[in-house]
Image 1 (spheres, each protein chain N blue to C red):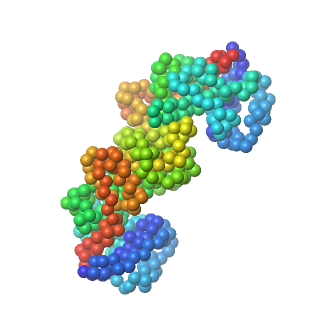
Image 2: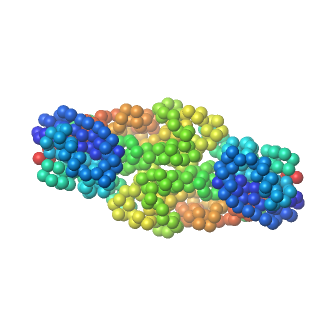
Image 3: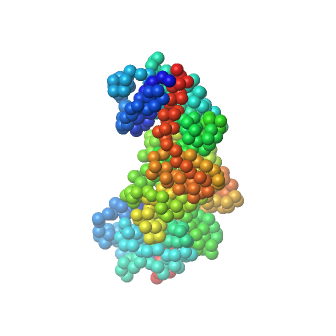
Length: 287
Length: 287
């Protein structure tokens, strides 16, 4: 089993792993994402990482492989497994390569992901989920992936996290959604209302309910988050369906609450284990 | 028929009308909305209006009657007609009064309007719509009102215009939705996709389709607007239903296109005639 450096290089954050004998022996996380790298020299940055982590082959994933990153690594088409990603590597030099993203084009329906595919496929590869499963990775852009036979066969992205941030920072709600979002009664009320999926009207209802005193101001953030997550979940999860959630515990718990409330069964799994399993498998296939 | 000054005083804009013998004899529009009035003296401002328009009784409507305006004029409860608004006037002095807003509280469902009620009720009073009708006033916050017997019996507000502005200005779409929104093929495609009502995912699809080249960059604004308006309309309009639209011609045409495409029948009516009919009727009832 070959030793190597894996870099999960996103828009905002970067995480570097040294992997020896199939185990993570060192890791480092910083906010040096591709946006912070704009105009900087990736070759020099890679050299600095090699100095800290050792002179090993390097496998990169995430937005580093986009048009705003180091080099456009393209996209693998569906269905996509780890072998297809390994075959599709974008080779920088004989020691360095970037994992491609995944695209969906189905008539007028289009979607893309870049980075999340490693976690989704790694989770199934490591046995953290069945090889046929519905997985969810919440965040700024929440990704939902359907796996069959250990391959991604379908996926969809919802702007759930970004919509909440926009409303919180720039809308008529600015200043009134700053309380912590917790999976309490207000959140659950929001989830049920959000599941009706007339989001644009439901969101104004938060404003009206606050103005009329039906919704306590300190509950507005949880209720509004519930609306957005409830709408997102209602569009993806059928009654009785199991969903494997890859997220930090706080956000994961919100999705789990919404999924359970709407008749599914949410289960949190460890996204770091999923990532390392996926990237190690691709490195093995590459060697 | 008494002569008076009517002021439609919104958050951003203000329109003053001198009404003599039931006809508008002078009008003036500026951007001196209640937000621009923050910290200023309404009494002095009214005095200045009287100097320009004549020493007449004054009837105000809109956000001037809110907590961010001159004085909170409260809300009339549903069902609400012109007589109820006249009975509910917030009297400043014997010459000056503010029309109340309208509120809806129905279990957990809450909504408010302030200013639009004059147009909705005025339209029916003037015979611009039947006394039982579905009316739509698109804008930053799109208002849908259901009238029965010339009274508002139900209404709902959608944040459609504000969501578009947020996406255009502050989201991952910033800079890519600046083209004019027109009711063309891209807009119509957006309306049909938006009517599926998984808005959060449909919006990310605009990004993905642009990245993958399925959607021309210059069509992104029309398509995204179509998504939002399509979702809004699909939640309000049943097949075969007639909708009377109170809006400027460009925005009205977008809603009309979406309503017609989704099986309704949109008809544009003149919002200024509707406002003057409504405010004159309230003044008559007041006298």
